[in-house]
Image 1 (cartoon, rainbow, N blue to C red):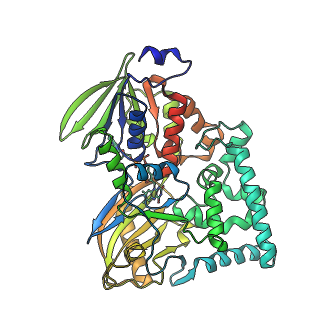
Image 2: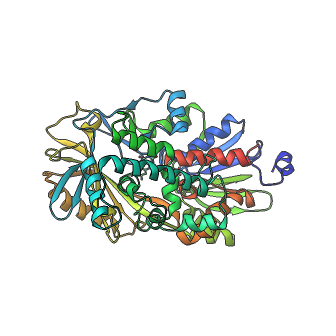
Image 3: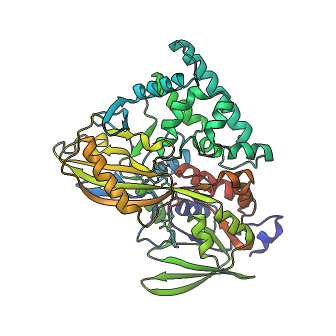
Amino acid sequence: MTIASMEFGRNRLGKGDRIAIVGAGPAGVHLAHLLKRRGYRSVTLFEREPGVGGRAMSVRHDGFVHEMGACYIPEHYHEFRRLVREYDVGAFDTPKGHDRSIYTSEFDGTMREYPIAAYGERLMEGLVRSGELGRASKVSRLVQLLAAIRRYFRLRTRLLGDSGYPLGVTPSTAAAAELARPFLDVAREHRLQVMLPYFRLAQSAQGYGILETIPTLYVLLWNVPDLVTAFIKNRLGIARRPVFRMLDVGIQSVFARVATADGVDVRANTAVASVHREDDRVRINTVSAGRTEVHDVDQVIFTIDLPDTVRLIGKPTAMERDTASAITGSTFVTTLFEADRWPVAAGIAYVIDPFRPGSTFGVSGLRDVRYRFPEASAARCAAVAYQYADRLPDPAGETAFAARFDSEMATLGFTGVHAIQRKEWPYFLRFTGESIARGVPWRLFESQGTQRTWYAGSSACFESLNDVMRYNLLLLERYAE
Ligand SMILES: Cc1cc2nc3c(=O)[nH]c(=O)nc-3n(C[C@H](O)[C@H](O)[C@H](O)COP(=O)(O)OP(=O)(O)OC[C@H]3O[C@@H](n4cnc5c(N)ncnc54)[C@H](O)[C@@H]3O)c2cc1C
């Protein structure tokens, strides 16, 4: 540890420290980029895969880029957009395919399609039928909606603060208890029912949990005011700009370009096998092409999922063990496939039923290549299908997903389906409600740097490119020299 880093009251990342970052996904590459910009001299990334990007994975098929991982970029991803601009990596698509609006379908053995607005109406009717909402004219419904949005924004600021960073403000015990509760209960208490159709689409259809069970923290983290406003303006026809955009060259290229242009020391194909913390250093054991190596550094920053982090640490502290056991998660499976033709009306179709409680999994979304590249062949379709399960991957999962994929594709009317590539991702690793109530995510942040160990990446904050980057900025603002 440098002298400068000892002078501060709390743990510090010293500029002269030898720093190892475990994982070269978006969090790791972005952090290395920020550290380099701040004048940190010795930063090494260890990545077990052949290239950088992690869950930002873009593949080329027949000349077109398909996203197998991170895909959509809303307007408020300022830090990601800065990288795209400064490193001149491609351009944002306004998808111009054969139909740009998202359609939703319900899966009940037969497949019915609704334009997104009609599906929203249907959810609204359901709320009226169940007595959650009274009958109302269009105008008074709009007034209700605007009032509910205001209440939602106030609730968000009260519980999360307005630092602009994920987990930037430690909540009071009472606020933490509220953040831990299932969002549907909190929404009812704060009279937000009129926003539920929005939340079903903006939260659950993105794989961010089922409203009946997801802790309120994660709804508030994802649904920042900019996103809610963009969605609502779009739905009301006030703004024609799409809420989400895609990057023509693929998101993975951004991280690859940044790592190369900044000259980041990335050790690819190098898996970290174990980490041992000693009084004066951290010893990192890696395996690369069957060869083991030892690296001594001053600080280690983990960007991999917290349970994996704790498995790698030789003697985890009680706090680290508690943190790892406080994590649960989901599975997202992406399948790049070809079929004889694209039988549904829209470029993107969602199968909504898997987002109800008790469901196991199903095809949750399909994205046709012509959604972005209308010039792609209409004869034989290429698309990415998403399947979501509200549980972590299990060894038997992949076959079960494949079987479900086959049967649902057939129900949707696809023929001649051929899966080209399939990826099963652990997704949206998150703190349980019980641990949120105990303040574990914020305690982790406060303990950063203890025993020369730092935690970043999506499981420490939230599963989105924007959140991992904002968390990096927060980390450095608080702890860097
Ligand atoms: C299907 C899917 C769709 C998504 N869509 C979006 C979207 O539209 N918009 C959005 O903002 N976000 C999206 N996300 C989320 C986004 O991709 C993640 O939040 C982001 O990639 C998290 O970055 P990370 O660096 O924390 O973790 P990761 O991306 O998982 O990177 C971690 C890296 O660590 C490496 N690693 C793991 N263990 C070791 C080890 N022992 N040694 C060395 N290296 C190791 C991994 O190989 C990986 O490269 C999506 C994710 C998925 C899976």
